[in-house]
Image (cartoon, rainbow, N blue to C red; front, side, top):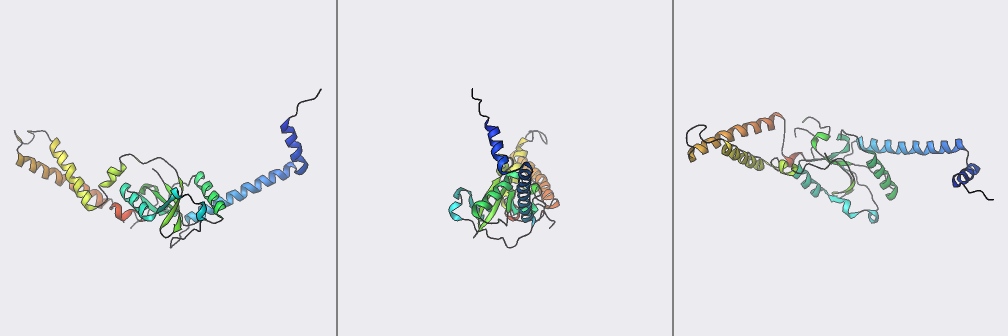
Length: 239
C-alpha cells in the first residue's frame, strides 16, 4: 500500500526548495574559480625570487615534528646523495596537484600565506644558470624547514655510493686509485710479458691510473662539474 522512499528524490526536492539549478551551477563554478585562483597564486609565489629566505609563521602546536628538518640535516643529505636544495623558481618540472592541495590545506590550517618554497632534487630537475625524488619545503625560521610534500620515484639504492666519490677531492682521488687497482688486476697475465712481476704490476697500475685520472679530470673540467659540498645549494650548473 505504501511506496518505498527514494532518498535521491527527497534530496533533490529539498535542494530545489532552497536553490535553483542555475544558482547551484553558478555557486560551483565560483568555488572552482576561486580554487584555481588560489593555486595560480601559489605557483606565482613559487616562481618569484624571495631573498632573504622569508619566515612562515606556522602555528607551532599544529606542526608535525616528524616533518621538521634543520638546514644542516638537509645539507648532509644533499652532499651524500649529490642533490641540490634550491628555490622552487629553478625547478623545471611541474609541481604535482597533490603538493598544491597540501599547501592550500596548510595555509587554511595555520591561517597563513606560505612563501619561500624550496626543493631538494637532483641537478637535472632544475633550470640552472651558467656560472628522481623531489622534496618540497617551506621555511619556518632559524634554519628550520617544514616538509610539505614528497613525490616521484625513490633514489637508486647505489646513488649514495656513486655520489661518495664526488663529495671531495680526496674522495675522488681515492676512488680513482681504487678503480685503477681493479683495472690493473683485471689485465690478463702475460699481456705485456710472459710473467707479471711485482714491478710490472706497479707499472701497469700507474698506466691505468694515468688513463683513468685523465678521463676523470677531462670529464670534470670539460663538463664544469664540482664537488657535492660546493653545489648542494648552488644555482649554477658549473659552480
